[in-house]
Image (tube, rainbow, N blue to C red; front, side, top):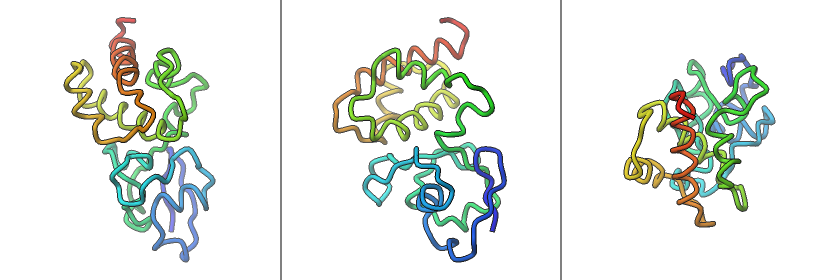
Length: 156
């Protein structure tokens, strides 16, 4: 089996096909930015994009992603050495505390800005409520998303 991850075809042995996409990403492909949180898709720590849509990688079998494009936090910037504007805004607004949920939060935020390039605060709250953060950095998340939205629209 092959998976297209972050723009590259990656070989996955047949005995990994029934594993979750999260397990294959972390344990076989060494892409450890995507985290295991709750294991039931509720927390969002395992968020990736599959064919451009937010997906909980702990809830998807690797074999179900075989013909799809998978984007993880490691592939967010493509070949660029610069951070993605959402990642930079995360740093500028000092969002991360423990950092555990941040990859999932960032992937969720990138999806929001792709869908809605100029979200208001309520749209951000509604979209980001799908990801849990125990550190209580939600107000910083909102500020970071608004900053990234301005940057992506060329209004920095």
